[in-house]
Length: 194
Length: 181
Image (spheres, rainbow over the protein chains, first blue to last red):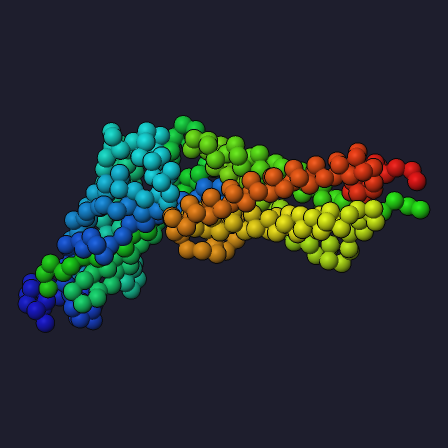
């Protein structure tokens, strides 16, 4: 019931929202990323063969209040050299110039601009993704669920690698390595405030 | 009297596989030392697709062989030679099955699924395991080299039969070589 105390008195128009808040019993804000429980994995296709990969190092500043999802914000920083592209050959290759060019562009960043509730536990996150000095709009759905003191964000989206010149030159042939990369994020954040 | 010969099906399967296995072996030797490039990925995929094809063909061939016994060997052949010939053929079949299987297992262990012609995914028989992948790569290579050596012995024996023993052994598989009797 603490939430009610926080509401400005006489804000009638909020009453439908209040009902929603109360129905999700424990409104809370989630922020601190639990890196060891979170994962950022991807599937790329080469010659029709799906290859699993992941990034081992990333950080995120998340502010997600279950009571005010539209006010949520997120900022991700991804250490591109921490890539595990599925094989040692691929690991050595993708950090190089035609791909991530980590010497010049060590980090990929995402900065959110908006979060929109969809239905139930589903939301839509919009923002700007920057890889290899190129910035593109990104919109991805995600789900949120709460487990004890943790908030879990899960989402999948498709990124077109050539939008960011990732794998250019000889590698831009999408018949060999597909343009579409399936990216899956599983972020676990601790409640910062209840 | 007609010279003994294999069925046309056996003949076709034999020569088709001979070409395919020779190509697989040469491409396999060539591709492993290539630097990573889209071309390398393509060649690896082609090698795998051809390998799956060879595996299917050898199964078909075995099934055919069980229903259609090989023509008998010349009565003039000493017993040890007959035993050696049978042994060698068994080994050839064994390797023709074991090599594609080791390639398939190696691909699974290395985390590269085999997708036949880029459309039909074969199940991964093993979970990803780097060390096991390396071991299987060596196994695949050793078996392939072993098959290459056995094929050389097979060819040498066929030529010996044709040119030294002057019997019908080679013409069973190449009927146009059959001598008039």
